[in-house]
Length: 169
Image (cartoon, rainbow, N blue to C red; front, side, top):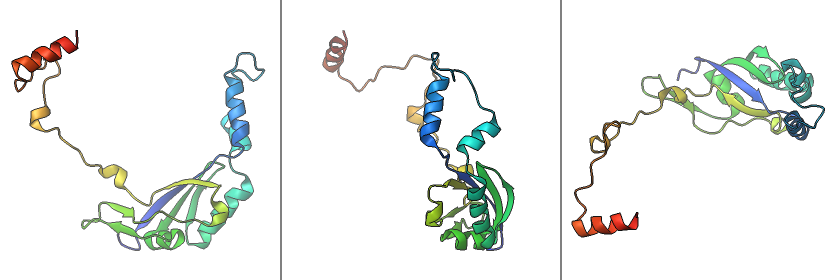
């Protein structure tokens, strides 16, 4: 793709306090627990299990130093914008495109600073291949009307058909 083309990259954060989250989920489903069906609001969930403001700021600052514009930031994700060239430099990868440029993807897994390995869970936006999955048509020999009873295989000899029938009785 054009090195100046714009990408919108969504950085999803890993949840923190996983053991506490697992305990909470178990308690919320246990009728004998005082936390049974005591659901959290999104803000309560983010405060307990989302990333801290300092962690969000650290990732935001790293991306900004690499030329990214942070469009939205929360305890769960960052939405950013950068050029293809900026994304390639920041994530130490290349982004290749189809001859038409309609389909693009990173050619290697993106890399992030080691200090963020437990903070960042995933990234979306370095490719658009999810929108261009191949569609496979069944071979005509394998197509049949589901409302019709399948016909018997005529390639099975009579003695073999008898053996198969007795094996299923």
